[in-house]
Amino acid sequence: MSVKAEGEGAPTKVLRGGSLVTPDGVVRGDLVIEGDKIASVVPGGLAELPEGVQTFDVEGCWVFPGFIDAHTHMQCWTGMDWTADSFETGTRAAVCGGTTTIVDYATQDKGMTLREALDEWHRRADGTCTANYAFHMAIADWNEHTREEVADMRSAGITSFKSYFAYDHLRLDDAQTMELLEAIKPFDGILCVHCENGTLVNELQRRMVQAGITGPEGHALSRPAEAEAEAISRLMYLAELTGARVNVVHCSTRLGLEQVRAARRRGVRVMLETCPQYLLLDDSRYLEKGEDGFAGAKYVMSPPLRKPDDVAALREAVLAGEVDQISTDHCSFNLHGQKDRGRDDFTRIPNGGPGVEHRPALIMTTFEGRLGAMDFLRLLSEGQAKVFGMYPQKGALAAGSDADVCVWDPGQRWTISQANQHQAVDYTTYEGFDVHGRARLVFVNGVLAAQDGDPTGVQPGRYVARRA
Ligand code: URP
Ligand code: ZN
Ligand code: ZN
Image 1 (cartoon, rainbow, N blue to C red):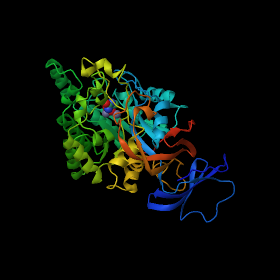
Image 2 (tube, rainbow, N blue to C red):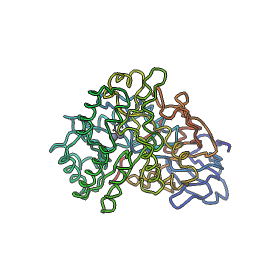
Image 3 (cartoon, rainbow, N blue to C red):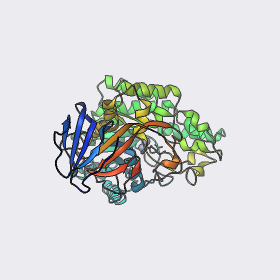
Image 4 (cartoon, rainbow, N blue to C red):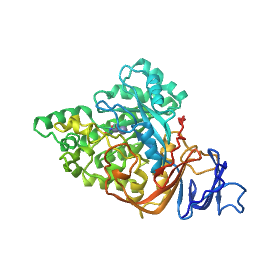
């Protein structure tokens, strides 16, 4: 494939001869972009090329609507440290990998109003982003005022919320979670929930440390599958009781999946997210030593990496169409200077790992030959857009949709490495992974923002206000 740019600065761009991944199927043809919108999808291609347009030959490539990562934590204090990626570096890395929109978790601290949290997230993100960005609102301080503010968040474009069953500084109790579900039900909001039983985790952490298990392996041992499954099950019953819509984020176990399946059979309105790390890595990673004996800390994230049987179960769920979205939970901390502060005590290792840049390549490589372009569309873009009130403005290659476009070259072969990534963190959990396919051209709001895995240097990202 060659990339030919003619008529630099022309308002109209034509992507010629690609396999266009539209909502109705894959068709060969041209895609016309005018300004920041898709003007038309032309099966078979334009009969005549208008004068002065800028053309891109994308033959041999899939043309997707830009991918959407609906689970990130950029420029965020997580109770132990600031994440390594800012909105600027994180969204630039996202676009290099083909992701044109992130939905980040704006997070209320105790004593803060939702409005204050939202203003703070805008202050961090506005004017710095290469990708588009929207916010979920994570609620840590449930009180009368918060309850009133929840419905008001809609006017700021926020229709999805988050609560935690773990992390002492964030978690809500069951009654509070139920009240939050009741508050979002009238406008059909959706609650994303971190499902781990925090009381159980605290006790198991205490026991690990007491038993002298202080290395990264203690992290996984203190957060067993049962702690996830119990919390998912509890959420399923709270959703059933209230009739509200929920999204189980970062599902990581077979046992957790079974809770979701059982709830779906009962008619509970539950969406399901998993992440590349739970589809590609297992808990043997915690024993990695590396040069300084502490490499296992790279994988300290919650929920932790699981058994190979869990990885297999999640892959089966993806293949069976049970998973609505694959997003990353990108929450990066450097190994040196951040994670290594927990060298003598795994409970002091900041939780989270990077991934926003590599998700499309990892997922398309992992499921190559078993899933097709329409499946990748649903799992990496359309699912997120539909669940979170952005469709068809985002997640659709259609006339009138935003011109967020990823031209994916399935023929490229390359190797993921910290040395070639744009994520501002000193490692990647996928070091040395050989992947098939790469984002050849990435347009954000009609502007070419990355090419062959590197940024072009522009920051066309905009805030995305969403509907319920
Ligand atoms: O370890 C993780 N995942 N950190 C980010 C916060 C969360 O739990 O989603
Ligand atoms: Zn979480
Ligand atoms: Zn998260």
